[in-house]
Length: 137
Image (cartoon, rainbow, N blue to C red; front, side):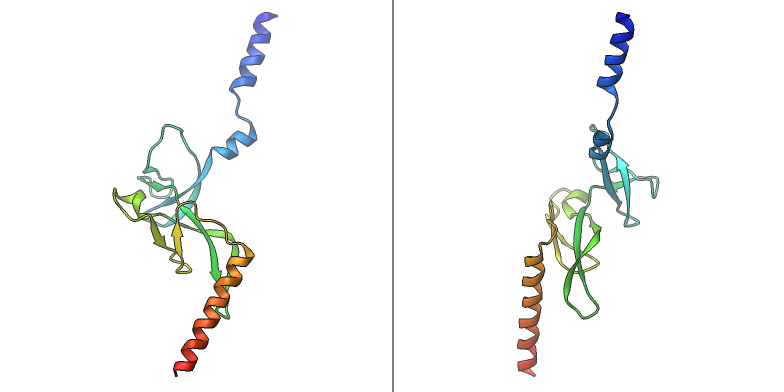
């Protein structure tokens, strides 16, 4: 009976809960293919990680960019982010910021999801710069 109880307790302590599995799953970006994929990370792992896309050690932890431009040129947010690798992850001494290839905005570490007021401010900035350009013509 004691053996069975210790076995049950051992199982309870070592099994991974769905919450733990979700916490250990990260998006990775294949540097050569620029394709993102979900992966369970080994806590001992270091970049670059094994890549499921190209089968090389070419996967890095990317930053997320939620910015996009609408058809009329206004800034907006999107539900699914673009994934961007910061240069310092690829080479020692690399830049801590980069530009999103999809929208052209600057991406930084722990890139925040834009708040509605951030989008409004960005659109006001675009409107004021375009009206300044029009007055120069």
